[in-house]
Length: 428
Ligand SMILES: *[C@@H]1O[C@H](CO)[C@@H](O)[C@H](O)[C@H]1NC(C)=O
Ligand SMILES: *[C@@H]1O[C@H](CO)[C@@H](O)[C@H](O)[C@H]1NC(C)=O
Image 1 (tube, rainbow, N blue to C red):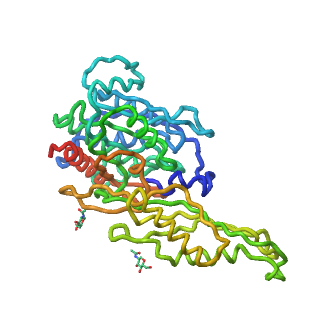
Image 2 (tube, rainbow, N blue to C red):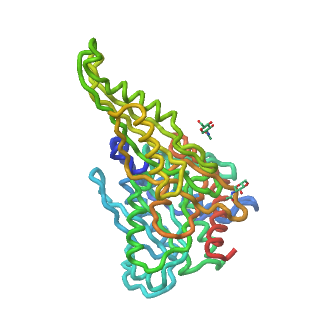
Image 3 (cartoon, rainbow, N blue to C red):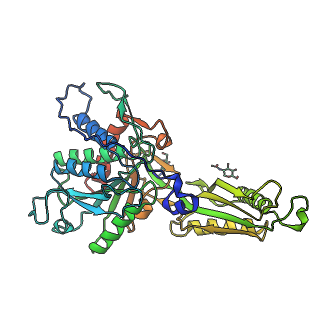
C-alpha cells in the first residue's frame, strides 16, 4: 500500500524517500516436524519460515534485488519457473539491480531457455496460453528497516510477528504462495492456471507494475480474466480505494517594505485565503468512499518577517472520492480551481496526473468487505480483468514503527486466498 504514489514524488520532494542499506540475512528454510495442536494448520511452519525469510531480506523501494533473488530461489525449490523482468535502476542504488519476479507452475515442458538461475524466458511461458488468473503483490517496503521478531518460540494463533513488511505486503506474498501450494497439493490448481507476479516499486512510483502491464500487453494477445492483489485489508475483501491527485497551489504577489503593504501584494495572504477556501469546498463525496480529503502537507512562502512576500506555495495530497477511475480526479481538480478562483486571481493550481476511485469486486461469498484510503498497484495494471484486493494485517500499522500482525491473520489469509483463487478460476 502506498501513501504517496510516485506521481506526487516530483511535487512533494523526492528527498522524503530515503533509501538506507540493509543487511540481507539469507533465509534458511526450516523443515520441522509438526508438533502443534490438532487445530494448527500443517503449513504453519512453512508459512512462517517464508514470511520470515522475506522480511529478513532487504527490499526498500529502489533496492529490491536481494529479496527478488531470495524469492526466486524459494520458488525454484518448489517447481516454479521464473522470469526476472528487469526494472530501471535508480541513481542511488543499483548494486543488485531490481526486477519483478514472474513465476508459473512448471508444467514439465521442455527446459529451453531455462538457465537455472531465475532467467527462464517468457517463451517458456507461452508454450501455454497466458494463465487466466494473476496473483500479485509487491516485494518492496518503506523505510526505515525494522528487524524481524516473533513473540513466542512455539507460535500459537495469537502470536505476534513484527518487522518492516510483515504487513505491507510480505504477509500477503507469504500467504498467497502458501495458499497456492495448498491448492497444488490438493490438485485443485496446476500448470497453466495462474501467474504469480511480485513487483518492485509499489511504495513510491508503481514502476514495477507499470512495466509488467506494458510488457504483458505487448507480449500476449489475450488477457487475464481476474487479478488478485495482496495488500493489507484486515482480512476483508476491499470494494475499492480512493483515487489520488497531487497538487501545488502557487500564489504570486509583489515584494515591498512591510510598513507599506498597500504598495505591494502579499502572496502569503492570498495563499492562506485560497487554502481556507479549498479546505471548506465540497470536493466531492460518495456513499462508499466518503469525502474527498485534502492533506496540506507542505506550505512555504516569503523571505523575511519585514518583507511583503512575493511568492508562496502549498503542496497537497488529495484523496479522491469521485469516480470513475479515468476521470474522477478531473472533476475534483475543476472544483479546486473554482474554489481558488473565487478567492484571488493570482492563485494557480497545478496537479500531477492522478486517478479517480478504483473499484474492486468485493461480493464474494464468505468475505466481509471494506473500503480503504490508500493507493495500490491496482490502477497500474491496465486491462478489463476482474479485480480483487485482499490481504492480512491492519492497514493502520502498515507504515508505522509498530508494523506487526498475528499468526491467525496470516493463516486466515491462506484460507481466504485459496477461496479467492478457486473463485477466480470458477472452481468453487
Ligand atoms: C463529509 O463532509 C461533510 C461536510 O463537511 C460532513 O458533514 C461529513 O461528516 C463528512 N463525512 C465524513 C465521512 O467524514
Ligand atoms: C459489504 O458488506 C455490507 C455489510 O455486510 C453489505 O451490506 C454490502 O452488501 C456489502 N457490499 C458488497 C458490494 O457486497
